[in-house]
Image (cartoon, rainbow, N blue to C red; front, side, top):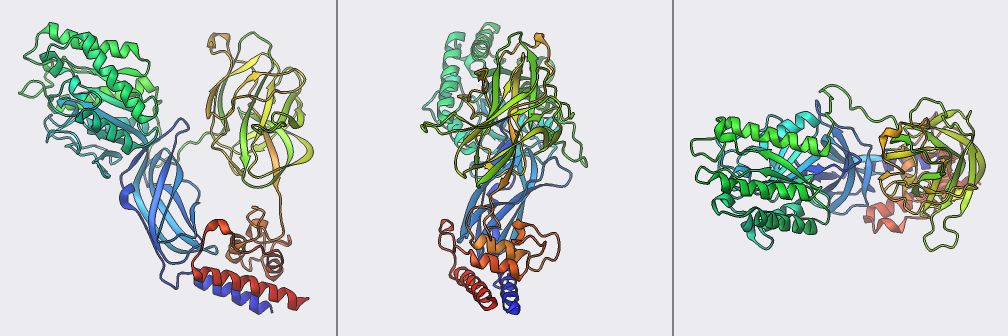
Length: 630
């Protein structure tokens, strides 16, 4: 009967090996696309494509293109039992990538495709009149392939003329993008919508010009741009617009853009007013209006300042439009303004060097503010699998293996986050980490642990783990970066600090932000000695016989894992199908899977008929094998 099970595995392998000519194609809409990175230096990249064949899942990953900055992702399944089309999202760190996709069936690849030149970095909308559009001379070309432009339907290499702006010659944006790419080593996307000879009034909400801004915001998506860059004012000087009127009109444009965007998108405003036919007094009114907008809104910063370009030889013969040197200087000024306002540190990575990922689970600055209130720090998480917590601890942020808790042990508490649940906020289990605790590996950082009586956490339930700050050191700011290989969703990981009862940590009321501020922000108080943050834990995923994936169900995914590792003879893991712990994947493990088979999972939808037949055949064959052995 061993031959029967082996035969089934062979059939699986043959079918999964692509004998039916399966094909997969990624959508080329992502070619040269740039997505705005968030505060955690990542973006959610939408993936789509078409598939012809039979597969249990579509997996994708991002790999840095050779010679470019980026951090490779793991394979992530974005679709199960796909039909003719598939879609999903992939979390991608800042960088320039080749996307890879593969269709999988029972652990084997049946089809694949790749798409290069996909970026996560900085995205800008540029608007205004001619010097924000294509009226310079000559047309410019980016010096780096990672500068992209949106043409209304797709992304492209950002060579002038910029596709959505008026004019047919040169703009500052290829140089702006190239300079910023060199500084940041991440791609830059530009959506240029400038219109020549326009006044600020012609950009008010409701006008066709304002609709260009609104369409650009929609194309970029939620939180999709770093800023809108505005270069306009020359026509208003000619129209004798007053400073007050100019400021009022521009403020209304900015306010409406934020309503339409759904977030407080920053604006960069240039100081621009000069025309040869206007007087210094007319120009001064426009500059005063622009400065009033900048001064009156903390999310508006000063951009380029170009009124003196005509004095230093940076304009063409027609006067207001810039020559080659002027376009390059204009781009440099905008890049400098963006770097300064957003405090973007220079990325010193060079081609050939691997990216330099953080070695800490959080970034953290601490200081002493002179008060002695106990605070609780922690983060919220939601297990995707049942797990058993076996130890509690606190992060060793500095990675120095030293527990710098000067006032004695560090209390840690695990809460259930139950919302309306009457037990919400109650400490389920606690531990005290002593001063002499030894730091151990925890994700991509270290932590000090204390063993506890095991407690089981249920998949889908929200929990919060917190540590108490019991001395005078407060966290000033912290950003949750990474905590690898943990079976829980991190979309709501974060933290907060709140005064705690001296007897036990108090559950923070706000713990769903990625970046958070704690306590006092005056750095003159100096830095405190503590290098810990929040809570961490050790765990075991609850195991059901035959359940390789740990989701509590023995189904096609577990059969897939077993088939993918069939007849592995040494060092096999539970997740690979070794259900009896002998280091092998063989007929004994197949019988365990068959004995505990729960059937095809409904949540994947209706698979192809061939898939159903194959999985049922596997299940029946394994059951027959087990019965005959008995």
